[in-house]
Each structure stands twice: as C-alpha cells, then as structure tokens.
Amino acid sequence: MTVSDSWLGKYDIIVVTNEKCDSLLRHRANWIENVTLVIADEVHILNNSDRGPTLEVTLTRLMEINPSIQVLALSATIRNAEEVAEWLKASSITTDWRPVKLIEGVFLDGECQFNDGHSIKVEDDAEKNPSITLLFRPSNKVGQVLIFAETRAKAVNYAKQAAANSQEGFL
Image (cartoon, rainbow, N blue to C red; front, side, top):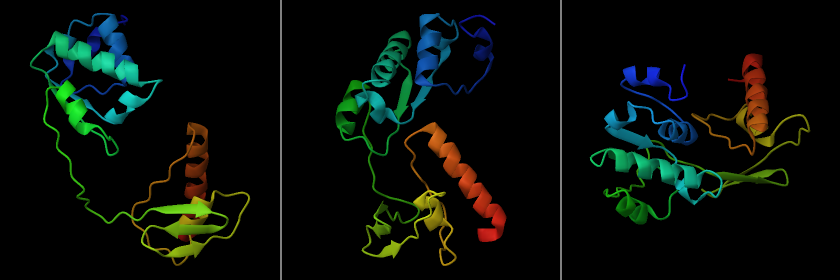
C-alpha cells in the first residue's frame, strides 16, 4: 500500500476524516481529481483552532483540483452558514424542522432541568453518570438519547454503563 492509498480509487463512496483527505491530497492520490461530490459533516469545526485549518485547506484544494465539484457542507450548529456558503460558492439552506421533538436538559446538583419547564431529581450514584441513571429510570419512556461526553474514554465508559443497565432488563 502506498501513502496515496491508490486502492481507494476503485470505490464509488469513500469515507475519510479531514486529516486523511488532507494526507491523500499531499501525497497526490491520482484518483482525487475524479471526485465529484464531497460531503463535509460537522463543518462548524472550521472555527476550531485544532481541526478547522485542515478542513479549510482540504476543501479549498478539492475545489481547486475540480472546480465543478459539489460540496455539501452539513452542520447543526454553524452560526455563519451564509458566509460558509459564499466561500463554497453554494446556497445556504437552513431549517429548524425536526422529525422528533427535542427536549434538552441540564443536570446540576442532583436535578435535571429541561427546556420544556419540567425537572427531575436524580439520585446521586457515584459509580454511574447521572445521564445514565436518568436514562434508565423505571418511569422513563424515552426514544433515542444522545449523551455528550468530554472525551472518548468517558464516552466508552458511559456506553459500558448503559449496556450493563440494558442487560439488567431496564430497557
């Protein structure tokens, strides 16, 4: 395998990180010029000092290599969508439509306060994340749940806690 990963050129869909795409560009992968659509998810990281410059350079280089390339930039939290769209020579499409109602909550001092006005007391369990405790309350009838964690290690830990609870018959 070469550094340009020439074997990737035989696929119609390739999923890579911004950093991997940057590496492919730097090593002049010959198939990159044939890419016609780039989907850049979480494009709001353009404002991130760590990863933003890599994404910006990568998108810029892809647009230089193939001026007719389509770029679909996705973000649920970008504040300057119009500016990014202009830079990408694209149209900005925004919506607040959601297929399911979003209820957000903040946990503080043993209580989860939700944006719809209700709150729930959560027992303090030193071995479990309060989010996991809240998720597996017997009275809880939730659908999909998204829990944010500060690090990958914490995310793995929370996932293990949730899996253990689900195996105990809480789901």
